[in-house]
Amino acid sequence: MIEVTQLAKHFGAVIAVRDVSLRAADGRITGLVGPNGAGKSTTLRMLYTVLRPDAGDALIDGHSVVSTPLEAARRLGVLAHGAGLYPNLTARENILYFAALHGLARHTARERAAELIALLDMEEFADRRARGFSQGQRVKTALARALVHRPRNVVLDEPTNGLDVMAVVALRRLLAALRDEGHCVLFSSHVMQEVSALCDEVVVIAHGTVLASGSAEEIRARTAAASLEEAFVRLVAGSEET
Amino acid sequence: MHALLTVFAKEFRENLRERRTLISALVLGPLLGPLLFAGGLSLRIERGAAEGDRPITLAVAHGERAPNLLSFLGEHGVEVRPVDYDAAAARAAVRAHRHELVLAVSADFAQRLEGGTPAPVLLYADSSDLAVSGTRARVAALLEQYASLLARLRALARGIDPLTLTPVAIQDIDVSTPSSRSVLALGTLSYLVLLTMLMGGVYLAIDATAGERERGSLEPLLTVPVRRELLIFGKILATCAYMTLSLSLTVAAFAVMLRFTGLERFGMSVNFGPGVGLAVVLCCLPLVPVGAALMTIVAASTRSYREAQTYIGLVLIVPTLPLAFAGAMGLRPRLALMAVPSLGQHFLITSLLRDEPLPPAYLALSVGATLGLAALLLAVAGRLYRRETLLG
Image 1 (tube, one colour):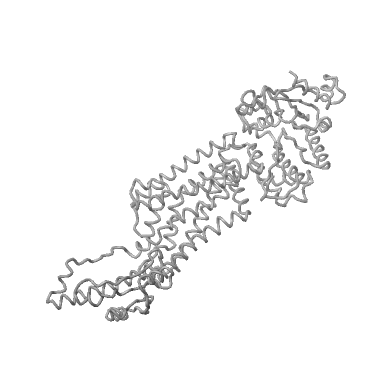
Image 2 (cartoon, rainbow over the protein chains, first blue to last red; image 1 turned 90 degrees about the vertical axis):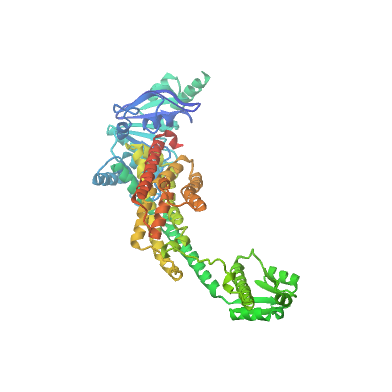
């Protein structure tokens, strides 16, 4: 479970996140949606302990990212923006490196990597060097790397960016499977169809503030819009008027 | 600690697969440096040797005015080639490199010689042509010798003991040992050793920091539950490993190649067996973490791979500055100077090659001061990785 209370972060004069509170429950998929520059990535980066919040806190299964960042990080699987791999290591070695950094024993790590490689349908390229991987292959490898330590909570920053239809469908299936196993899944996106197709909970943010949260249906009803997309447009436009 | 070793093992292995690293760290630096050095050295020795016994061909204008001088020169191995030049033609001939030297005998040579006044001969040479300077010196020395022979004969003819013409007897006593003489020639060796050692770590230092950020793998790395200092220390340790490999290979290459330079023929010996080689490596080891941490800090502070390369190029010069300074000032080992990193190592290497061990206190100060600096730089690197601006 991820509980965020009043997070704030600025870079110099730019306020990236003003006031974000949200709750992502276990066994649910929570979508963080917002226009470009809304503060989605900055919020997630504070959750996965790469940035320190200026104010507020986030608890990962009850562990504060501010006071006990290592404990919080242990309970998170992260697909960071960009999915950078080590080009001279094979996909499998990339996964095993992160397994070792998470403190997994060697044979446990090997078993788990093999399991994920099968699950994500990566056999074909698992033992090839990552240099020259397609975007789909890169994301799969990064995903396996994020899940290798069986994290209770999974955070993904724009995971479908640059993926083809087949890969998007496979990713959705995987996220749904994680939810059904009781994991807490939190991901960011600016694609509304994706969010309405997949999410149990939606959090709309713009200008570093939460505009609305609830199920897609609740948000649509509250804004009296015909679709989630229209609800989103109204919310963002409304926040810009004020 | 486990995480540090994990990072170390991964960086070490990954870079082992990078052809660029391997070639620059383990082939080019360690072989090319010593090869050029030994090649240049033996070329210089060969040339020096050839210079000494190469027959001199000397163009002489109006040699008929000084037949005795000519036969003196002939006896001393000078091949005289008569030419018919006036002053202007002699100048032009030397300037156009038709002759290295032209000796012109003046019209009143014989008359002045007879009269006991200085008889002029003119030696034309181009002092900007370095290749000629050796020959010029040899001809000038022969002319001096001829002049002093005449002087002694004159004194004898006037009933004066020729020895009175030599009021002061100068004797050169060279106290250099064969090893210390070769150090003159090996002056740049420690410079090359230190430079190659640093170069061995350049690629990894950049790749593991600026390169990692540019590829987008730094952010995922920072999400793992590991203290950030351990991540950077693992990277620095891998850089140290490559630098140590590079250092060892360079020293080994020097030890092998200097056997073929023929220094012994000139009464110089190279004190550079396996034992000395090992001692040289050990003396340089404390400088390895200093260089690795320094390069890592610089590379991690830059925004891109290219920028990192530019700054590292400058950083490579820093450790060699004390050596250049010491060379220019002619500094000799003193206890206080041993505390200067890289200068201390230079003195230690030189003393090993000269076979003149420095006192243990010198060694202790050099090792202590260098390791102290290494600890300081490691602390700075650790702080750098805790800063979030690291992500750029």
